[in-house]
Amino acid sequence: MSDSHNAPEATRPAAPASAEPAGQPAHVPGVSVRHTRAKGEPRFPDGPRADPAGSHFERRIRSFQPRRSRVTAGQADALQRLWPKWGLDIDGQRVIDLAELFGNDNPVVLEIGFGMGEATAQMASADPGTNILAVDVHTPGQGNLLNLADQNGLSNVRVGNGDAIILLREMLTPDALDGLRVYFPDPWPKKRHHKRRLIQPEFLDLVATRIRPGGIVHCATDWEPYAEQMLEVLTAHPEFENTRSDGGFSPRPDFRPLTRFEGQGLDKGHVVNDLLFRRVQHHNQPPTGA
Image 1: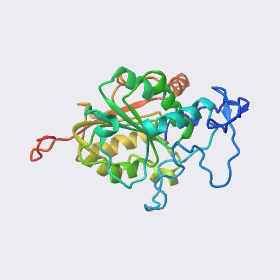
Image 2: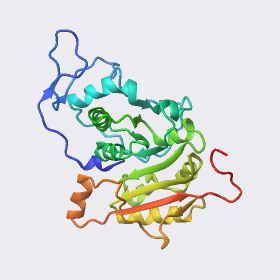
Image 3: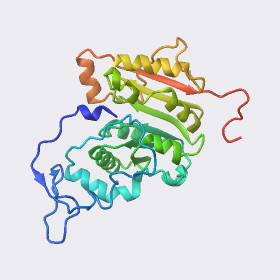
């Protein structure tokens, strides 16, 4: 669901997994992990689960495609050490208290699809007063973001593993979020796959119940047909209004970092479009917290 699927995989020599039995050599940071597991053994015993929601919910059309790629030893180590502290398996079995999750009452922005997490870490560092709940299904990216958060002392990042729809629908309370970020989601370019695109009217119906009035939905894509669809769908939705008075796309705001993937696309002549829409405060709707 993010630009990470365009990044080349590491081709380094293999190394043992992070959790080694006594007497086994320790892993080497930056070296890919290959670990022979017994049948049924979890990939990361103390890390994210393979399918946290299991069969508890209907198997709807998915807007993401889980990807398997190598996990470096550093990423595996971060998953093992930091997942119990900063990770969240999206199982749909409980409603989470965001203030408890982050340990404070700061505003919370949900980011869906963060790739390898570099941009997320930069935004968290630049705005420590905003909490970021970053959700993806890409295990190397989860480990990388946890590692970046640890290395840079970013206590305002939590990493969610699983389906963001289940998180929004089952695990968050009304008006729990102050914003939503969807950067470079899978464009599903083939016409028969357009139904898999995340930004659809039904998705926005759900989002509108979880973002407080005044909260911002911020999308970005380098796939122009998808950008046009996003603009059309968001403009037509009664719960959101364009922050641009001309009703068009927005310039990239300073707080969204320019990623390597985006820079490569711009060098090739790709057009990147940002959309910033505000959750509407209706006249008969009391302000949040009233």
